[in-house]
Image (cartoon, rainbow, N blue to C red; front, side, top):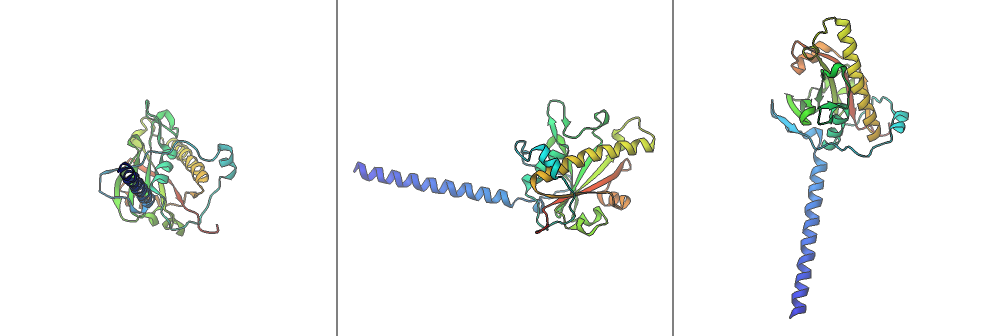
Length: 237
């Protein structure tokens, strides 16, 4: 009798283990399906991103040796975790006690906003909460540049300077210097992350800034500086 009970207990335990494994596998599959192409879009609301992965990756000197621009992209969307890591690397908060970020800005103005243009819609990255704020619905990727590949890249990052966050800078040439420097720092962070992850990436200046500002609904104080395309490389490239 005791042996029969023991056998039943073993069978039940094995069944529970199999069920647990199936649940874990299903959750992993669901996480893999979460991509930049199926982001939820609710106007004005924030979408929390997965916590960024802050360990691992390619050694810095190796990433520098391999960094390059690529203009050929596959149509595949980025996994949501990859998008999260990308945005944190670009200008995420790396010192929570002070709110300072991975990208330096003059006088810690933090005057550069990153707009994330995907097939699902356009969002503004909010570093403090590591979240995406919904800005515009619909696929605006083609508006981010003059080259045909911009509509194929999974993500186009648009670097937008806000003069309202730069008190005392009245001279246009001086502001342009700050804007270019700030955007360049963020862009290099993106280049190094993309290189480490095996992604295709290119920084772009061929942008119709007025048309893109209208498409993004920018305020008068905001100016488009540059854009950067990121995505999976095209097969064979």
